[in-house]
Image (tube, rainbow, N blue to C red; front, side, top):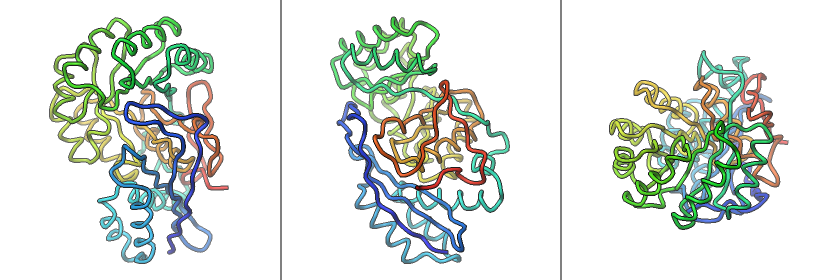
Length: 341
């Protein structure tokens, strides 16, 4: 078995503006694992300002893993990478892709016997000025999306409230609107803003503030349900979030948790707690997005997932899975169903 690394840098069509930074490109490392023409693929793509490890850290750890890997030490190497989840996600993803290829089944079927054949997805709208945000939202709905995720927290609360209201008026009442504040507000501000937005029919708000306990405090007071994302970066974090009883949605990022196996462990915890799971990608390459799509399919529900991010990239490492009428069809080929060009 060999482990090979392929660095990449991909430009975005236009910068994605969030409450903590503007993202213009994505740097990552593709990982191939296997032998004799049977290869599995994974992706390591930390996000600057969000991930706790830089791309340089991830690359160094993967290089060490490549030097130490042999068929008898795969488990040990995965354990060695647990402190750098994006690196672990790449290796674990490649291993699962290879296993599914050898089993002759799609990766989603390897992860769950009840995987669905297509995944409903949301469109992502950055924290742009109201006219542009309304235009992007209207275009997404015209293209078949039935769920929109709006970035908030980068502007003033008054601007955010006005922008969300304008988008609701533009798209009508049947389209689901979600918010993502990336932890921008304090608890009192979050509660005040979300209460003002309750009449706009917001489905939920991701990370209205930072920290599990703080998000739960918002959830216990807010008229809008809340979701945990970057404040829950491990299985233990997700268990803690579920234990509060005040968080309604758990966002599962296979890239950030450490791979499809750990993502499914998080899914199982949320299911047991009867909490909604939304799987998202991290504006990673087509390989990383495909892994997230298979995990989303394995969740097996009609919830819209945040995996329609490939269109944000001006270039990619492989043919991205297309979005059709607000859904992504899950590849039926053995394994991931996506390989680098």
